[in-house]
Image (cartoon, rainbow, N blue to C red):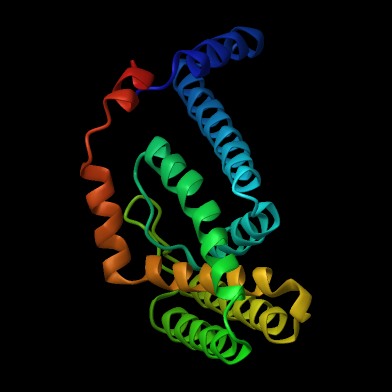
Length: 210
């Protein structure tokens, strides 16, 4: 596996300080790579949300999807750089769409919210937790716990959606869209989309790995 020059240099410096093995140095490089990419990813996502005027909606969407990611899993790109691009574009645009949904009549907003909750509950029951071949969930007990935690997440988010004050209709729209996205990445079409994204040739990504 290849890493950015920054990650390699940081790992090399830390390895010399701690006197670790070559294999441990590779693990350090991976850890630094993930930390740098995720931090830059989050900052860029929030910045774009702020530019589009939907900062708080973007924050709500990021937190919601992150909470489900740790309990229900779901499709994701094999490349952290592709994941970063998807995240930076997805959440601010989701928040922008949530802003539009919030401008609709109350009845439409209510129907959409209830539809989102229903779809999410069904998808969690059917497919969560959705693991990956590289990190399979072997323990049936852990699988049950993650499913219960995923359903707890749905219950918490649904309660917020249903009882949130009308002054925060944008947040309501963003939360509804977020759990729909969670449902989508648990499904086969969601996995197919990420597979397509992984097949896109990004010359910039190749340079970053050199």
